[in-house]
Amino acid sequence: MAAETLHDPMAVHPAGGEYHGGAEMTLLEHLKELRNRVMVCAAAILLGTIASFVFWQDILGWLIAPARADHPDFTLIANSPTESIGIAIKIGLYGGLTFASPIIIFELLAFIVPGLTGKEKRVLFPGMFAVVGFLLLGMAFAYWIILPRSLGFLLDFGGDEITPLIRGQEYLSFATRIIFWVGVAFELPVVLGLAARLGLVRARQLLGFWRYAVIIIFIIAAVITPTPDPYNQSLVAGPLFFLYFVGIFFALILQPKKKAPPAASQES
Image (cartoon, rainbow, N blue to C red; front, side, top):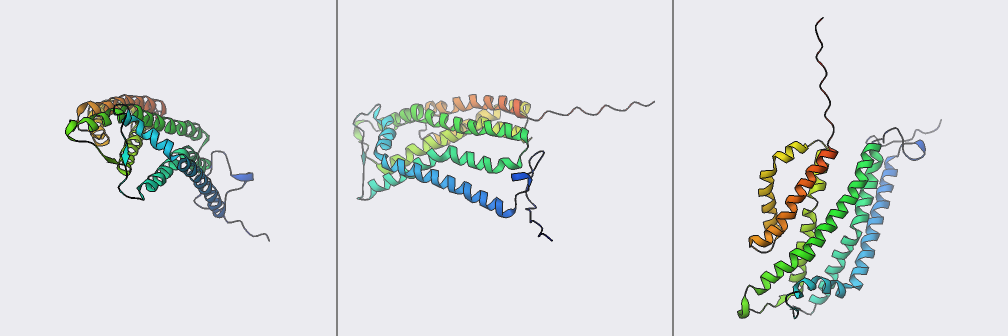
């Protein structure tokens, strides 16, 4: 008598079917698949890190460029012999994660997708491109708009009495923090669309919440923006407020349709 195949009791079946070759995936097959996808992500991060480390000086120059828009002689200092190599390593790690992020998102979704219905797959994969697209859009906005204006304000604040001598590590943390968090903040439409898809909110509720959203958005902008002036905060808050309404549009498209209430039976 053939031994009974052990199946994973927690496995979720796709609509209409089974997994590989018409058979369910065992727990061991799930673990192997997870291992393979983790290895792909690790390889992508490693390759991105090596490439970023090789070109770390070019990347650092790219990060310094916004400061040099108004201060052509701007340069960084190192307070210890190991600070330069620390900057190179940090740029390599940040660059590796950035370049590998689309692959990481794809592998994560590909691991989840076998347990989804065909309709959910058609929503999820465009969502992956939306996540990456809005992240890159936010990072580009931070680099081209927020950083030059913030640095122009901060570097000129002391006038002729203060000469800014900024350490490389501090500048790198400052620039990457703004670029990263503005990129994350630009994911607002994706978050609202996903919340609507899961039935947590409705587009009508989000539209009625817009006054409170303005306050929350300005709080987020105040946290992200390194300067206390309302001008730079508005540079972040304005696009986020626009993206809030883009998120309402996504929610309107993705939210589940309400089922019509059953007609009341008439007494004969």
